[in-house]
Each structure stands twice: as structure tokens, then as C-alpha cells.
Length: 83
Image (cartoon, rainbow, N blue to C red; front, side, top):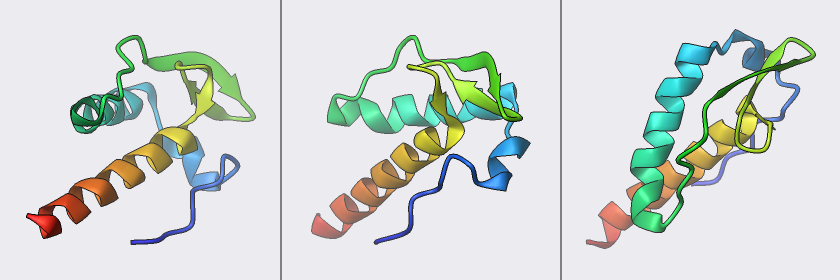
């Protein structure tokens, strides 16, 4: 499935809180592990840029986390079709 990536300046990114990010990081760990993607030290950051909370794996915007999750979900969905 193709979709447009979420831009870092998307206004919806302002709605994410540290607990939201923590849950999304848990999903990223679960989905990424079978593919060798490990971010054991990633967490909801304390840095806020222009009203948006950054994720602490290189101070990435939440949109990066969401885009990674979309890619992993698509990969899992495609793998289910190939079985």
C-alpha cells in the first residue's frame, strides 16, 4: 500500500503526548524486532520543537516514528498475503 508520509510539521503531531509516544515505541519494538530493527533506548523525549514533542532516538519528530510504523505495518500485511 502506498501512502503519503506524514510531514514533521503536520498539525496533528502537536496532539501526541509522552504516554502516546511510549505506546507507539512499544509497537515499533514489537514490529521491528523480527526485521532486526532495535531501538532499546528510544523514549519520549523531553525536547519540544515548535510545540511538537520529539522522540528520543536522535531527536526525531513523531512523524518519523509514525512513518516507520506505517512501513512496518505494510510489511507485515504484505507478508500475510504471501503465506
